[in-house]
Image (cartoon, rainbow, N blue to C red; front, side, top):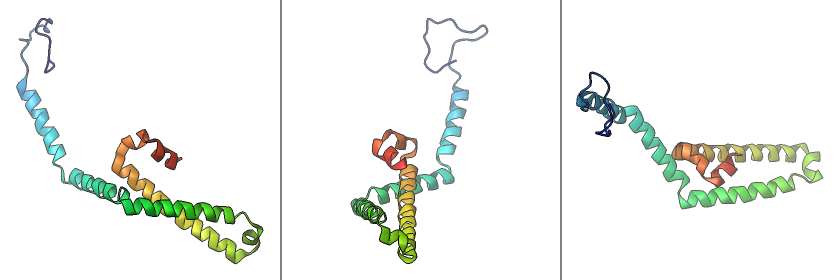
Length: 129
């Protein structure tokens, strides 16, 4: 029987129509023991720490600076002097990989912090693509 029911609704045969409080109480105990789980507490703390880091003003400015530098380097990498010189090309490849690692870590932290609501933010989805 649902917790909130229509008093005029017919009850199943053999039922008094009263709420089974013991079933509801045992479900509450299960839910509260899950909510107080040490693992969930640690995961929630990790989520909050990720949120503090990625939402920090200085971190956001740093990411913007890295995006601009990465865009400039991608433009410069199209010149022949980069592709013709193996040492310069190698430096550009290593730098590109460093940017990729940093941006992937930042995106992962955003996903940890926001959970599935991550996909409701257009800018985060744009970053993900």
